[in-house]
Length: 240
Ligand SMILES: C[S@@+](CC[C@H](N)C(=O)[O-])C[C@H]1O[C@@H](n2cnc3c(N)ncnc32)[C@H](O)[C@@H]1O
Image (cartoon, rainbow, N blue to C red; front, side, top):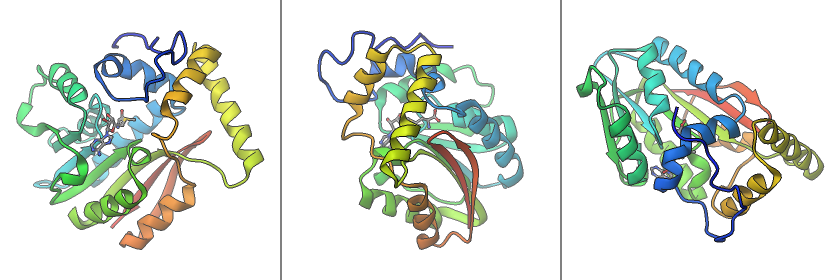
């Protein structure tokens, strides 16, 4: 386990927007586990789907890999899988290289410090995109979905996890309040919660869960399943 996240202990004094820099990379494991309800379950589910859907001589992609948690989960389910893990944060990729340096089969795991919009994806049986789409522009989301769909082999899958919002203002506020309670229960103070929220303003842009489903159908995915729903976080599996 990495260091404890206390970045916003004093709020967002600097007023700086959130960024996946070295400071965040150092505490990211703790940050995501204490902030995302069902995060560990989503990782176990990735292992199960990798076990079922990985095909020999294909690639698995972990897009927006941060510290490589999903890559690790893929390997738990399919230890012969070839994984390409991509993140545009150099700090995250450096941490990945450090974390996985003693991994016994280094050829099967490649880390790329790239913007996913520039990446070339191909011959994929399993693609994981965990909590990345929310950091892209709306046009980029459509382009990325199309790129993933085109890279998948028949019956290949995209596992997508995202924070979502609700159409109804009252219900949306209620779920946000409950999510804040979840974070309080995990040891974050009100000041830390509001400091992080302020720094994410305009950076993390959620959509309604239906938007993700519609986008998947629009690019051609034939089977669409919602497999996890934890407060305002969802995991979907889209099959080609
Ligand atoms: C919330 S984190 C992802 C968490 C990770 N998938 C997991 O399950 O632990 C979002 C990650 O996406 C990366 N990211 C954001 N925009 C990106 C882009 N255009 N291309 C590649 N990575 C990007 C960030 O650097 C960050 O590490």
